[in-house]
Length: 411
Image 1: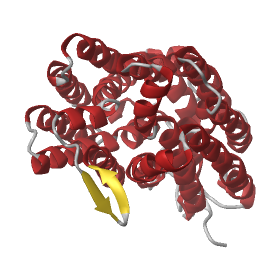
Image 2: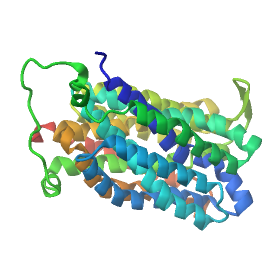
Image 3: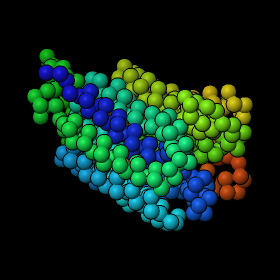
Image 4: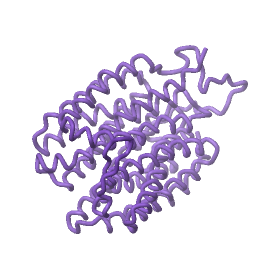
């Protein structure tokens, strides 16, 4: 019988594409329309992403624990319905507060139930030896959405209007993603008489048989190091990525190119190029985490992210700016699969949902701080120079923390 694990990986890729793509990568492309039509400001829109992580941090604790006990497939299907309802609701907003409310309630719940937390748990159920690669490939959907969607959504906004684009997003979830989840997702390999990685083991490998409590996890130094290292990496990433298109425009990248027959603004291309770097980063670092100690690929990814940010800050020449955007993406692209793989290597598959969920109140509150810092500083200075320098330093702090990750604290 053909191994079904890779089916889970590519289903996860499609789910990640729509969750992160519709919620985050497309959002800055809507900004000019929300600003001109509804009178919102850059700082306000930046804060939407920042505040979103507050309910997500709380929900992740509950959902993470539940995913270790109940059907991942059922959570993903219910989450898809809720998420689609949230996207459809965005087509009716008439104020900043209605936008913020939908992001913090319906979209937060739907995205956490069907998104990366659920996908990571699903894949960890199917893979052990090749978990890093599988997590990296599934997470490609996150960054690939950043390559494709800005290039597609930008002209689509002019063609059908921003409200109808959200209706299209909701329809994709209901009529494509939901059926894909229903027909392809299988919670565990033993359900269909298969084993992890599709490989029968000739001997009993080291087992993570002990189920850990929240107290057990919080007592482990490595848990805090992993959580804080990636929290600072995400903080740095969000503080730059959320504002990258507008920053690129202010740096002079405002020409319009014709790419594959579509009119593409230069600053939108820079945004998409960083996401393309993220695609490669997920594949590369997903592979490296399987063959190296967890600290090394994590440090490399964070260093690349810092270098990319400093390049975006100091260089306005288009070729160097675009190269910096790519390097920045290459670094942050590895963040999600690397964090999940670090927890998986250290605490085992059946503790993964709980570990990721409990880490969320550590990681999630720090993520929006980057957006908050950038939003506040741009309000005072109308330039991203100081804010982006600070974000680059946070990436270096993350690298120093990652150097302390020790896998020897397995239980």
